[in-house]
Amino acid sequence: MIAATPARTDRLSLYGIEIDPLRMPQAVDRVLDWVHGPDLGRCRFVVTPNVDHLVMLRTRDDLRRVYDDADLVLADGLPLVLVSRLLGRSLPERVAGSDLVPSLFNATTADRPLSVFLLGAMPGVGLRAKDRIERDWPHVEVVGVHSPPFGFEKDPAECESILEHVAEAEPDVLVVGLGAPKQELWVHAHADRLQTRAALCVGATIDFLSGEVSRAPTWMQRGGLEWLHRILKEPRRLAGRYAKDARVFPRIVWEEMQSSRRCVVPDRHRGD
Image (cartoon, rainbow, N blue to C red; front, side):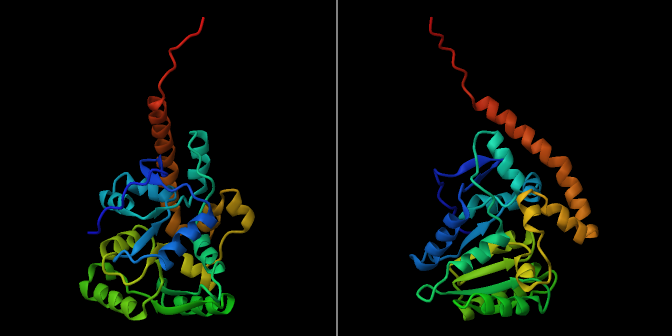
């Protein structure tokens, strides 16, 4: 178990978790500071909550511990941002994991290159993502690609093998696309031994980079309709999840509103 991340006074308390209220350029700068700054002796990691994560957090104490220890918590879901504004604790913008990775790559230069290891996706997908990354971002080097087998997280030998592959490659950043909550739980469990400065838990990002899965059009992303695009692409896998999210998230919002009202101290002063 890693040492708990010190409390950050600039975080916002929302939906039962602490969220870093950063815009994309600030999030990129934070990760690059980790890469080029002092070595903590452990991997720092990023989680990107969306509505589905908040629903899981209601019943998953193990995932909540991950969020408590995360070094950077970025609001991926647009509903989280919009509701935060209604509550008067505004998150500045959505910072999706699938946007964070290419934004990080865009910030590289000849003087400040970046090496990455891609962990996740189906066999062959990571190699296609590697080809695309090194073609489009000349200052990013993909030093490792690994697609772990199903159920690997329960196999100590397989986990050890992954840790050895990462250690041999010595990447600046580990891009983890294993799906939630597996990716968050695995990174948290092994953060002390991961030989990389930063791990980004970013879901389907490797699939997007490879072209294996297409992202929603920009207008759908900006309008908060990316979920509709995804459910149309993968109805069998996602329909049940989104149905549950649609039932539970309004309850989370209501509870957050009630909590906010209880925190307001009424002004009893009346000037006459």
